[in-house]
Length: 352
Ligand code: ADE
Ligand code: ZN
Image (cartoon, rainbow, N blue to C red; front, side):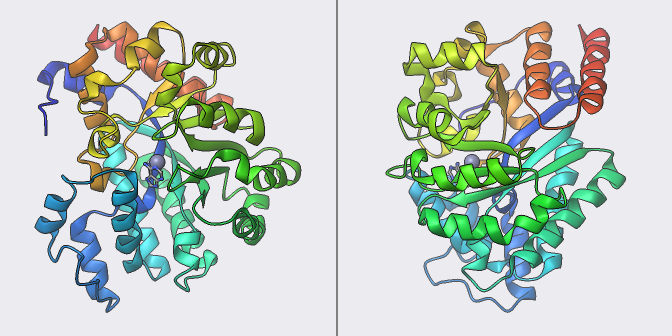
């Protein structure tokens, strides 16, 4: 991988800068070591074409041809998650690492359909993740929200069933958002209109987002707004080719949750330098910087911040603007946002 290291001094500024993560799949935080540990604990035999050791996994992770090649591996990997404690352990490891990276608020995705289709109940999944969310807050002082994603390679009717099965968790405020992930092409957002309408009508306080413009063109982003009523977009980098869309994102303060190292590992770009991050900054398009599937893509949130700094060299002040845009685009309450903004100002005073 290219060298994405910056000076020790700037790295410690970026570490201390209060960060919010809006785009991380809990199943994508399954490190090879935990994957093999859980396979053993649950007596799971991985398929013969699966890399046989953690080292072989890491080698494989340097050679994803594209999003689909990664997803084929990711869905097999998550097959080692069986019991409530497995989901708990997975999420707890992520929250611990995120906290040590200076990530103070995380909004985390999970893919219930990837588990239910293997015979794991949605209750097992959500109970494990929810317990970890609550324990992370008491142990690390960080805040978090769970976002349920629908797999877009499955029919919309299956998505609607999943939403209905998750209704108690939406009602109890245990799940806070709805997202859409998996193979982007050829599954445009409008296919899932009935799912998003259902959540919008029945749980109006739930946040709506969707992956769009990762491999799909800018029409995927525009159509997520037009048909799904989302307020933000995951990835969204292909918005760069549509001037009118960029203006709409900026004027409406619609945040893009950008994932730099993911884009490199999935061959969307060859280097972080090719991402439209300077363009978004200059056009006032709010964006946050995220890890997506850190166990697979070679870095957690701080590694992604550092990688962006090596290529775009933002000033302390510009980094504070990026951090505050991430706070504004979060789904936590105003008190928490205020607290986080004040912490940004404190870190600025200390370092600039
Ligand atoms: N599921 C996990 N990671 C993903 C990504 N980068 N794009 C779409 N679906 C995903
Ligand atoms: Zn993603």
